[in-house]
Length: 391
Image 1 (cartoon, rainbow, N blue to C red):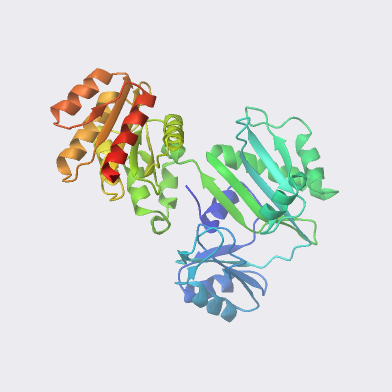
Image 2: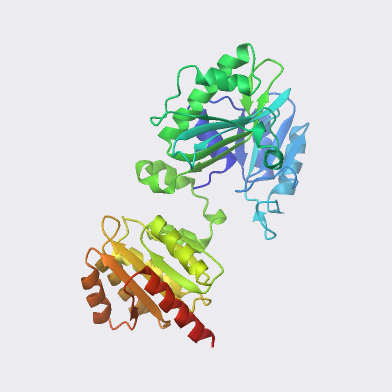
């Protein structure tokens, strides 16, 4: 779950991360009101959208008066902001974040994430931050420094100080850097985050470190541990289909292909996609049925798949076990097919827990389908059906 900047800063402020004073506003007058409560006489007005590159797209404005804040907010609110990360359709700006302007002597890049190769929490950083950090890192990977934490999330003794020095922090900034790293690690682990990115992290003339911009992503699968986080979802920023899938306990992403895919487990789903691609097929979606999904949830997810007019055939590839039983998924598919007028060719590969019973349920629902013996057989059969439909 992506957070807006103001949400991320509110969460990180609870851990003592140094931040500029600021608040969110949904109208020009509210933005002016925020500015009047802030210290100083220079302000930053930032469009709140789930995308990077806002500065280069005109989504961040620095002004010298509270009336300037109101004018900047008026220009941004309701605007469709197009950045490198939004695509040509852009994102509508429904809120702005107004904060005091902080003068920076140097901008640092800092992030904390899960390293994919080791599965461990990692701090990464660069001595010079900015919106072009990705381009510079692609040209010279050595500018990015990495510190892997121990499996329990605790750093090796002295490693935070060494990492601070790698970011060219000296003198009193080393201790402040270590303190910031500790706070970020605590926030990352306790919030079940998958990314916290600070870009830029300002080094001020007073030798302070201040997080000027924050991007934060929370793990959707851990939201059951944080019921208060569910209110952080910005429904206007989410694909309505993907949002409905989440409400049905299904991880779902729409894609451009013509083969609907129903799978339990992300790893099995990725393997299924790879095999389809190798066979010349193109998936219409990614679907990972969570362990918490009921048969009615699964029916709702299958409804989404059937509502896609591009789907020419459906591949159901399920391994029943600790993830989901085959009969639970079969029942969900049966409920969905009973309430949908549309029919498409379906290939089913069930294996594991209650596989035979799953097939019995499908037949009892009167569903016509092709039974596959294994994954390879399932891929071949669905590809044959797609070619027949296209002929």
